[in-house]
Amino acid sequence: MHLDIITPDKVLYSGEVNAVQLPGAKGSFEVLNNHAALISNLEGGKIRVKDAEGTHFIEVTGGIVEVLKNTIIVLT
Amino acid sequence: MANLKETRTRITSVTSTQQITKAMKLVSATKLRKAQGAITQMRPYAEKLKAMLGNLSGSIEDTSLAKYFEEREVKKVLIVVLTSDRGLCGAFNSNVVKRTKLILNTKYKDLPKENITLLFCGKKGFDLLSKLGYKNDTTFRDMFQRLEANEVFTFAQSLLDRFTNQEFDRVEIIYNHFRNAATQIITEEQFLPVDSEEFSGNGGMNNDYIFEPSKVEILGDLVPRSLKTQVYKALLDSFASEHGARMVAMDKATDNAGELLKSLRLAYNQARQAAITTELSEIVGGAAALNG
Image 1 (spheres, each protein chain N blue to C red):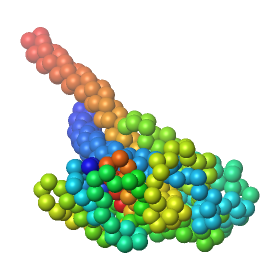
Image 2: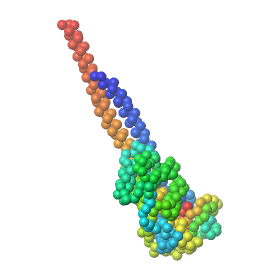
Image 3: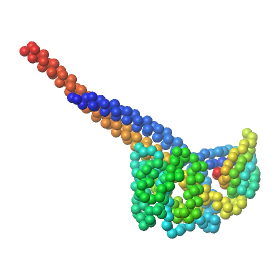
Image 4: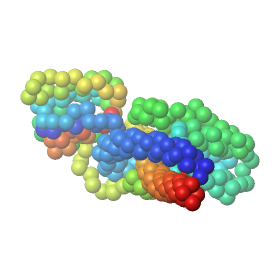
């Protein structure tokens, strides 16, 4: 599935991923392949991205995530 | 032909002016490219936000958001004036100033001056408008020196807060909208209260989303975020416009200097030739007199 992490300044991450762990407003949650459509608030924290190269952490200060048809978009 | 030397000095001075304008043009061109890059960069963000809002717009009448849409009787107004920090950019700043004055003298002419606050981003606006007797706010005057999303969002948040605290009943933004490098469109935008039409969206396109924690809370984050993005966009537009305007102004100045140089060189050469001719005829005349 595809992940985009976008800020107004730049694109923080864009690429194919296996799993994403997000700091949701009501606790951390993980998104895997074929996740149901979801829109959620994010709190400040780290996004854990698992892709072909390994695990990355990307820090965000809150935002919104939309999951739809294996495309995850994080606006922060 | 005493003006030979004079002309020569003028040629030197115009040449160096031309060099300066040429350099400024190049600098502006680079900065413009950067500023345009920033606009393109934020476009996907803005578009995605808009799409999400469209999906959610049904619950926009919710109470926690109504504060941004509330139309109050207009008693206190905040006008955000976006100009540049530096001059030499054609009509860029004077357009903003003209439009601001127009609004002050028409739309808000019945309001007492102390109820109108002008908030300046950019030094030029402050220089040209701060002495009109309205209240001035210079907290964010140096915004353009470090145009970053974080800073702008803080600024925008303060606008939202001051509106919801009823410090102001209306917030307007006057800026140069960036069409292309040569065209800026002077724009006045009512920022707050928000026109609810703008957020009506399509509403129908519902993909059965799961909302975490709830639709209302997400909207509570999404709407101010989108408003802040609007401010950021206006600032980026103004910044790109400034450099576009300066580039065009400096290009024209370089051309004009070229024209001026051409005519000066012509005058100089004519004067030089005339001097030589007189000298020659004097020598010939002198020789003839000796031989005669």
